[in-house]
Amino acid sequence: PVRFRLTVQPDVPPVPEPPILAPRDQPAAPGIIMMLHGDKLSYTGKTIAAAESELVDGRLPETLGGLCVYFGETRAPIIAVGPKAVAVQVPPGLEPGAVAVRGVNSCGTDAPLTGEPIQIQIAETAPAFFYTSSGGDNIVVAHPGADGRIRIYLTGLGLPDPVPAAGLLPTEPLPVKPPVYVWLQGQELTPEQIPLAAWAPRAEGWAPLRLPAVFGDTPLLAPGLAVIEIVAPSGIGDE
Image (cartoon, rainbow, N blue to C red; front, side):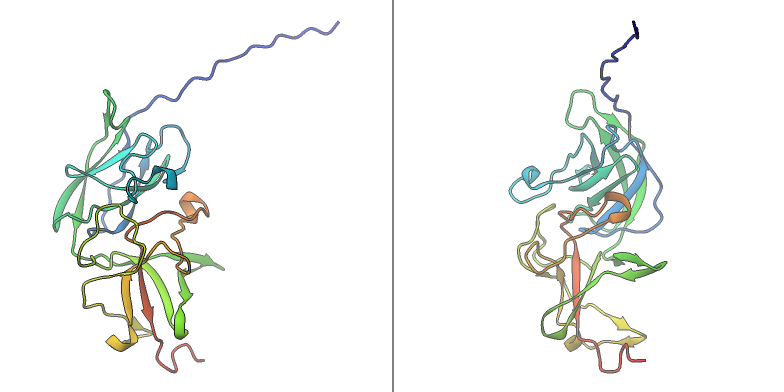
């Protein structure tokens, strides 16, 4: 006869620990989509993106996977979280200046686990493009718009007027406060060549945010995603 011994180990739930945020030198701006790196941010070891079912009155949750992120005493809407990175929307109501940012695991429970804070400088604007890689090159994410326009996606372009609530997903473009300046191959575009500078809506025909290097190819619910529509001058891009 063949004999063997089978030992069944019970599932041991992961034990939460205080999250660790890595220092960040780049400034941020109110309403910007910001990636914070670190460790123990998702103590389950899983990557979680905010889903439709977690929206509250059309707004992103401020706790995801047990984690919340504070800017001063204000919780940031969370777009997605993984073990070593979290994407948030910087609260739109912040004033320029230094702010302490900290993560809290088991947020909202009787035993929250608070990590050490880091200091981040808040500016009025902090433009940053989203890139996709192709053949080793970083290419700005851009898509064709109507009437031959080009839509370029970025964040940190500034706030719309009026300022939407934190975490609110727009259903139509929300123009940002002017002025917005764009240079294309060293040539400054005129205001007529920039017909739109706005927070992008969550609607058909507008590209969603993807951060494939960290969160895979899942489309993310991302308030603060901005778009510039430009009309390229004749001769730009010609060989």
